[in-house]
Image 1 (cartoon, one colour):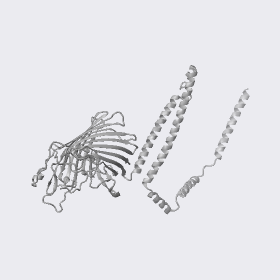
Image 2: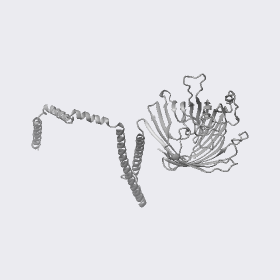
Image 3: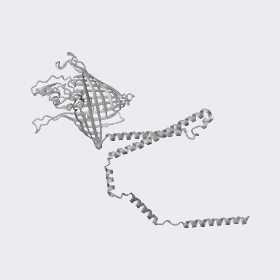
Amino acid sequence: MRRKWMGMVVLGMLLAALVFASGEAARSATPPAPAKSAGKSAGAETAKKEAVTPANPAAAKSEKAAARETSAVEVEIQQLRELLLEQAKELEAQRAALREQQEKMEALAGELRAVRSHSPAASASAQPGNSPVSLEAVAQGQEELGNKVGKIEKDLSETKKSLEGRLKGFGPFSFSGDMRVRYENAFGGRATNVSAGVAQHRERFRLRLNANAKFNEEVSGGLSLASGDLNNPISANQTFGTLYLRKPIAIDKAFVTYSPRWFKPLSVTAGKFAYTWYRTELAWDNDLNPEGLSESVHWNWKDSFLQHLGIVAFQTPFNESVSVGGAAAPTPSGAVFGGQVQTNWKLHERLKLGAYAAYYHYRNPDQIAQNQGSVTGSTGVLGGNSNTNYTGVVNGQRFFASQFGVLDMIARLDADTGISRFPLMLLFNYAQNTQACSNGAAFTSAGATAPFCDPRERHAYWSEAQFGRTQEQGDVRFGYTFMRIERDAVPSAFNFDDKRQATNIAQHRFEVFYQAYKNITVGMTGFLGKQLVTATSPTASVTPERYLRRFQFDFIYKF
């Protein structure tokens, strides 16, 4: 046994020595990598680079030039389109996965209900922890997948909006506008001591085109074109008729606004611009765009009782007086100088109040009287409202019996009714001419007789209620407004022009508008108005009359 054991040990040692020797021989037989192989690889890489380098430099330059000539806008739009396609594909894939998860979850729920209905023991063995695919895990996966789909849909929507905005714009400019077609009629309105008048009918349209631009972080501006009579500053309506003649279109706004980064509440606007102050049509018509300069500062506090404080100032000349070569006693240009304090208050989560106080000082308002309407003492340059203020004539020219310094106070209440499509707005506007019947010196200094003027006819009232809105398809808005404007409360040239007349009037307005499509609104507005007749009214010019009834039917398209 010992010899056999010793023989096995010797045999094992011989085998180990043999294996070791064969391994060393194999390693020594493998040749080392030649040093020139690295050089050969480098040469191959150089050859590859040379192969991809264009052989003709001129051709390469022309290709680069052609690439530079490609419009940056087209490239960006193409990138956005590709991004939209990729996101749409990813969204579809996620939706398919979500459907699969829902089907799997429904199948597992069905199996679980079936097992539990057969036996309690089987029900115990079918707990979610023992199931091959946990029902809770599937639900969690479905929730995560739903979140991913929601994020993709949000990104897709934002990308579409960005693409639409870029397609509508050109460089820094963005474009918009509206087109309104109107049919209207009018009945009554004549004095009660004569027969009723014949009904009148007419068709009109209004076209407005806007281009706004943000040139940099501090400077923006805009330009608007509008239809309408060139001599009428308070209407862009153009009446059909006049032998099919072409209709004029002119500059309605042209302005620039500076908002410095070093003082963000400040903005300064110059040119012909939209109102920078809050107002109703009691004093200023919606279609009028003042000219001149306006400065404003605004502060906002989102979560406080006082949410907004604004101060606005404006200097808007309405008539320039220039004496070439100078004059001994030059006539100052006619202008409106004014300002407004604006506040907004949060009374409740669903109740907000806006309070506004403004003052308008009219310098040289007689220049308005001398250009308004084609009557004695007027050139008739200014169209729109006929004059209804007290006036007289001096040396063949018309003068107001009043100066105009108008205090304008507005309170607006906005209520959230709990139904998003039916907000409620209540507004009250009171105005008073603090300089009524104060222009007598213009007549007495010229040796003329001052006209009759009742200083009590200096007040104006505007009460308005709006219920609903016109923002989304299917929205409806109802409105009612009552206006009482005494004769010399405001200048008659620039306020709301669809009334019976500009001042010395009691007027009712009824509105209903329906948002038929995203960009199309249809509506009807009814007016009932007549002149005010008081104990001091000149009986020669004012007699009791019937209500003038006017109805307007509008089709409005916005783009």
